[in-house]
Image (cartoon, rainbow, N blue to C red):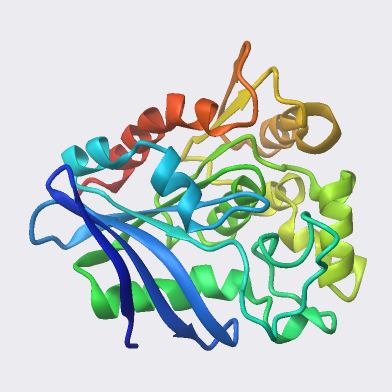
Length: 278
């Protein structure tokens, strides 16, 4: 599958690039950021899924991960958060639904289903684009994300244990069936509430618990969204019931911003690098 490199910067001996390509899954042009560490590779891959209103740009410009990723020899891929384009359905009066808010689901309800196939894009199409064009090792993949992207990382990682060696998240939406952000998105994108469980980590962990792998979650205790939208304790309780090892770290004074993410992103990189070795 052909690509177009839109931007290319040297960083800590590696390359930070922005790439666009035609997506069959999403029915249009998609962009993603990729940091390639120094060396010929093939490099293991860590995916960072971003949150509401974001794109590939947020973590690549605010995360500050490039130095450590270069040292660890890990490629970091930052996909977009939704399909884009003039023909893509949107809700211009809302920031939590539509463009920038794909929730990493395969939409089944019209008019969303034509383009909003983000689950298949992340799990199937994007890895193939990487394999066709970059020196990456798809036998060593790992996944993390923030907020809506943390939800995506948990859902995708749990449902595909053979594909991702480790899962982590920052401030994830862990029980979308129970909070407004999730109810609004799943209610719009999916035809039936019967489909919601496939995108709800608190429900998925009972079926897909990875009892030999610890999940890492960092959450700021000063996060304004903590109780109304995130509720990490719900996932902790579900993990305990399912026998899923979980390291849920709550941090005094930290909020939902990239000041928080950049503080702990290095520890997540090291967590994933350990899983990706060998």
